[in-house]
Length: 275
Image 1: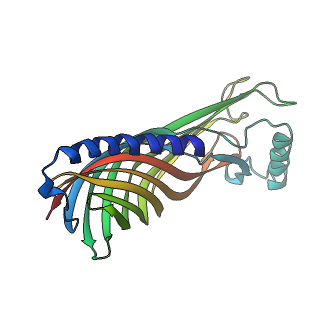
Image 2: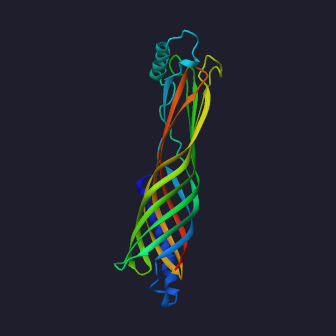
Image 3: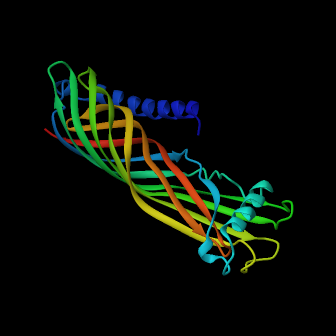
């Protein structure tokens, strides 16, 4: 999803929340026109996320699986020939995306200058996942191959600072950023389509998962819709870094599989304020 679509989608979400908030605020009792934003709040959210880090693949020697006295230079020579023939893809596009949802807890300090600062932590279940398969038919001097990569964000969380400005007593526009962490999974599979899988062909299946640390930045709008209740719409960028592992095959070569986890999230949420 490109930047233009991101802006449009975020605008639609914020517009929908804003319309609901405005109608609720007009119907509310006038005594609730100046709510307090200070104090503890808890809430829930739901949204949609998409990933923009395409995995890369690179062949590398695995001399531990070579026949006795088979020099590593010969393995590298085979790899060079495979690369020249473009027998395997060097990058994949799983287009991972999916729903996210979870809960948040935070604390706000409302300052006399109409600024609101605070801290928020959230934990999210994630359905962001995707896969891609590349089939290469009859590369020069080598067999046809099928290569697949899968990518997933299993769950993630953040601990963030928030700073916002009250454009009026009920509407808060804010920026947020801080620590991100989460569990990521990366899978790889390769088949020889010409001869099948044996000790003379390149086949294999491997995967890795890891709990990773990173960072996040975002912005949003939040509005009080009833005493102690607010709704928000938020965009965030979550960077969980780069995951890399060596996928073993039936031949004396490995695939170095690498992927960056760059997630873009649009979500709406509901908070209850204990003030």
